[in-house]
Amino acid sequence: MNAPLPRFSEDAREQSLTTHSYYLATAPAAGPWPTLQGAVQADVCVVGGGFAGLSSAIELAQKGFSVVVLEAEQVGWGASGRNGGQAIVGHASDAPFESQLGDADARTAWSVTVEGLQLIRERIAHFNIDCDFVPGYKYLAVNERKAHALYEWYEHVTSFYKHPYWSWIGRKDIGAHIASPRFHSGLHDTLSGHLHPLKYCRGLARAADSLGVKIFENSRVTAVERGDRPVVKTASGQVQARFVVLAGNCYLGGLVPELQSRIMPVGTYVVASEPLQPDVADSLIRERAAVCDSNFVLDYFRVSPDHRVLFGGRVSYSGMTPPNLRAGLKRRMLKTFPQLGEAVKVDYAWGGFVDISMNRAPDFGRLAPNIYYLQGFSGHGLSLTGVAGRLVAEAIAGQAGRFDIYARLRHRPFPGGNLLRTPALVLGMAWYRLRDML
Image 1 (cartoon, rainbow, N blue to C red):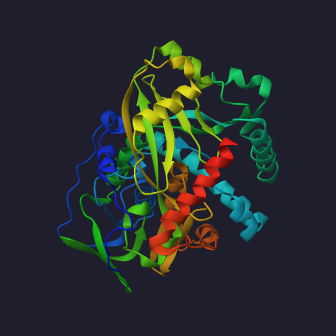
Image 2 (cartoon, helix red, strand yellow; image 1 turned 90 degrees about the horizontal axis):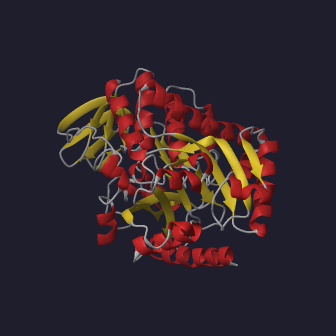
């Protein structure tokens, strides 16, 4: 597998947003790890130094495999270090599991996501990762019509999946949960929560390193030669391994042509306000839980330990960062919390690309018996990537039952091919935005 030019490009605004991040300004350093030089051998070569790759490496090392991780930039450089920080139960869409796999396997897949949230707590405790984890998540509807749809889903999850962690917030109680005029009602989730993703990712890297995993940064993979012992090549070295795990989000470029059309890089962006007075910050969201609205094109937000509002949204399906990003997200933040006032400052603005699948279900599978891939987390990656690493490690160790539930899901390519699929998606999302407004 050779790597042509990436299937999307990050423009100058996007490049600048990799460094103007609140997370980057507040996370302790990790590494640096060296660039791969020369030939190395290992049981497993993992491509990607984000949540999925590092989680795979940890699980494999704990099973006794020798592991090499190759990261094109620095650990946590991509979506793992720039996302909204919300760790949420379930998948972006559970419908494909129910329609394609049947009740039993759909319930098993849901339980995997529950395990993913428990795994975050376990790793924080076991590896002593200081990443500002706060339990609690609110999924809120902005009007009665959306509240009706959300309540139907709430009833389905609590009955079909026997999920005990949710409670309904009625119209008369919403003001006790969030000091915002935007919301009608919604659900509260005690299992999900939020954290500082770059602190967590760098903590995973230190954990992997402590287990003997060899991490190489600034080591972009240029080709993967298949065979009984695949060879993973970079500009200055190569890794020969028994198994390969591809966990590069949408940053693998054209390394895997057969997977290229099955995910779409989608930009998502976050701003951080200046620090607020602690009592003001406490007044915004009960218990400082994470919040997301139920619109298709959604906003998501939370309050940080240093009393800032971290507000995300303005999703871009064009591959280009929206203009006036800081001002646009500030407007949405003030629409949600008008009491902050126009004088509130925005100190940071950043963003990046996540990998969305056509049906918004994760896409896990094999390119060959010894080459595995993890992609298509579709916005639920913070919790699901960790347990995805566990599933792929189980499969490599010979226990593939849970991994194969995911691998059985059928995924369609985005229509339009490389040339037209982005314009087609932009038009489709314009329709969903219109529906949200109506």
